[in-house]
Amino acid sequence: MIEAIFIAYCAGYITGSFLRGAAYERQPWRFLRWDPTIFGYRQVVHGTHVNEHDKVFIALELNIPEEGLTYEDR
Image (cartoon, one colour):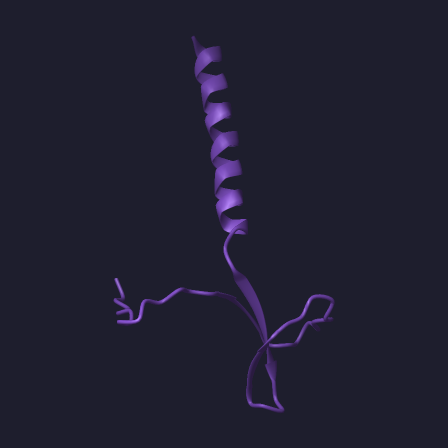
């Protein structure tokens, strides 16, 4: 009985870890680094070297409808 519960727990954990990771990787993530020449953030291109003291954001691209979106802090 304990073996069956342990196997079910392990199978659920592995499946959940895989699905969570797959959903996270499918998001349109963007890396932005501070550019003092334009006084703003620019998207980092693949192969760009980012230093330890660079100001970097990881952003998620959102598809906002034409009527807009209301942000509510919960």
